[in-house]
Amino acid sequence: MALIVGLILLVVMTIVGLVGVRVVSSEERLTGHAVDRSLSFQAAEAALREVEEAIEALKPRPTSGCSVVTVAPNSVMACAPPSPSTTPRWLDSSFASWTNASAVTSGGLSITPTYFAEYLGDSFPCSQSPDCSSQPCNCLRYRITSRAGDAGRAQAMVQSIYATDP
Image 1: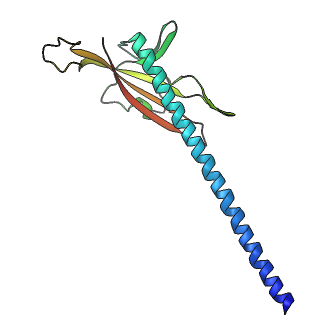
Image 2: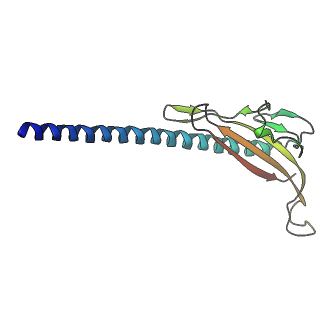
């Protein structure tokens, strides 16, 4: 009788151990995905800030297509205003003007985000006062799209609208 009870307890303990191992490995995978997602998001955000600084320095006003605008030490991929009737550039798989921003590293991981900036025009109001006495009447606006992450891993895409004085 003691042998049978001992074997049943051994089977129960084995099952509990296997369930524990499975739970731990599942949580480890979830933690890895969370780290990937967080690093991808941070890299995309860092690219936005980098591009905003370059736009503030360069204030590009492209009239057609996309091209890199450079005035040392700043450089930015700037695109002409988008056509309302076409697919947004960030959804268009044939859009080839994504440009690398500075890599973001954390420990042994490194992600290089890509971005582009779309010039939206210069007819956006900057001033709250009707006579524009305190600041320029109109500002330049840009839509910056940034993405980070590798295929098969967590990916993040973020956008910002950036306004600057002419």
